[in-house]
Length: 140
Image 1: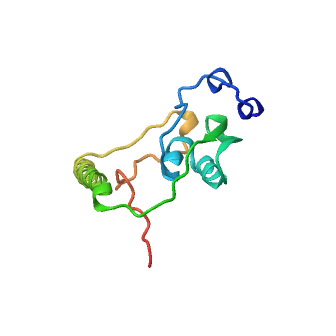
Image 2 (image 1 turned 60 degrees about the vertical axis):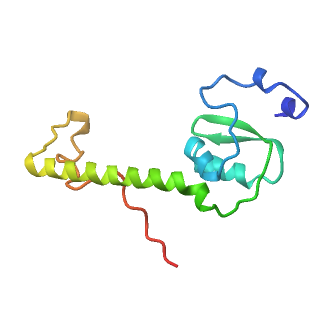
Image 3 (image 1 turned 45 degrees about the vertical axis):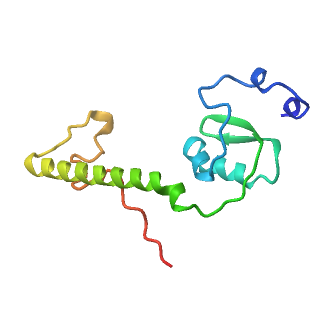
């Protein structure tokens, strides 16, 4: 961190990783999807720009360079139209998959014979699993 703050080359410091070396402007949720919620909270809780850290993630310790900060804003329909469309398609696909799997569970009896170390696990799968559980209800 000290070397980076004094002009060190980030490409020559630290350990190689398959993680991205940089991220474009994104939301806290976008960072959390890649590095975890605690990491994202620490990054978005940092006041200001410049190098700081280290911050732990499931992948190790990281130093972070904040290059730009943009205030949040409400999205317009044009901003979210493609996301809404893809979410709708994905939701319909999940519902279709869940219905198909429910039909298959009615046609077949499923039992699981676990090897000895796993004998305490359920002998039958969840009778009505969902591809994605429904999000919690939001009260106003």
